[in-house]
Amino acid sequence: MNTTHSAELFRTAQKYIPGGVNSPVRAFGAVGGTPIFFTRGEGAYLFDVDGNRYLDFVASWGPLILGHRHPAVLEAIEKTLRKGTSFGAPTEEEIALAQKVAEMVPSVECVRMVNSGTEATMTAIRLARALTERDKIVKFTGCYHGHADAFLLQAGSGVATLGIPGSPGVPKALAADTFLSPYNDLDALKELFRLRGTEIAAVIVEPIAGNMGTVPPQPGFLDGLRTLTQKSGSLLIFDEVITGFRVSEGGAQKLYGIQPDLTCLGKIIGGGLPVGAVGGSCRLLHALAPAGSVYQAGTLSGNPLAMAAGLATLETLRKEAVIPRLNRTAETFADALQTAIHTKGFPIQLNQVGSMFSLFFCEKPVSDFKTASQTNTALYARFFHKLLERGVYFPPSAFETVFLSAVMTQNDLQIALEAIVGSLEEIFQ
Ligand code: PMP
Image (cartoon, rainbow, N blue to C red; front, side, top):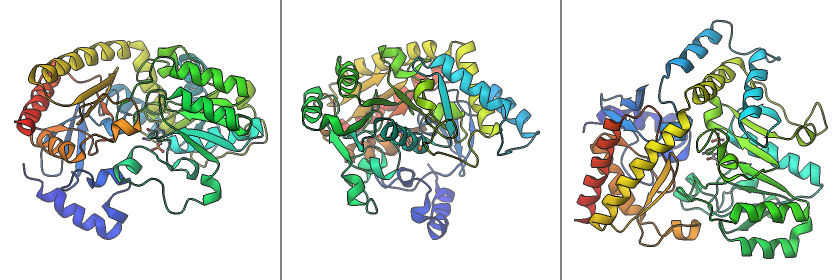
């Protein structure tokens, strides 16, 4: 596979952009080689600057559940674009999207739009701290909630990929307000609440972890969080930036039947443009300015282009009952993959929930960050490049989720299955 032009571009990019990229994992640091520079996406496929084509299992890290250039999304963007890109003033589009989110996500009545998942989680904890008049928050090891100071401790995603426990630049005093607890370990959390419960403003969790690879919640874990937080007067925040509008129309909270106090959204809600959101009951959300006194603002928040792309995406998901169909397709794909893993005796683990999945190169089941960290990242790197040579684009890190999109055909998935099994055979031969 020729990637000469990508390599040239990467050399130039490194002169002008730190590390040559605008988000760390993109740099291929964890898998080696040169990041691929893309020019175009079409449905389930990506095309690079050297003319190679790839079946895309990254989907821009989740937003593109409908694939690249979905006609309904493109049309909505084009139509809105002709009227202007941003007014910094209220528009009808924002109401339509907020209303749609409230209809779809069970615990959400009222929504504040922001521009990224990071802004959503920052806003959610500020709100929780203001409402409870407490300072501490709890996050789980290996979960990632964006790059705000409070969350960069034992975080997943790029933080795990780079193998750093936190980040320089986060004040010690601020880090001290974040308690860490292991994912899927209710007893550890109970102990933390026994000791410090009255200081805890909120527990924030990825209801299905996606940033240490895919790690589902064990039965009783999310229920336990709900009970513990309720008892101690803390808020439960579901970070559904990945799971929202993906694992079900109403996210993980609908799938598991648990109502968090606050929900953070991102990715799919923007249909490929930058959007995030915080939602919850009107009682809680009305604490945000100008209804209340908790300050939060944004120059481009709720801009009509992003609202139109998000609304077209959510409407398409609903109208065409995309998610149940995608989940069934994903289930069949995962079953076939699991059968191949079992039959061939590959020493790897497959975790899957709906259209999210991960392959861990380790022998024991993965249920938290400790077990996820046993994955052999060198083997993952070899696997990643073998897939790339076969025209299949997986995330360039062992600690990320692989996404199926609704535009992948049976034929695409058969090709992917053969590429995955073929790559694994070469690695384990
Ligand atoms: N929360 C979760 C669960 C995420 O996966 C991410 C991004 N991958 C974020 C928050 C941060 O979102 P953004 O990159 O849009 O700031």
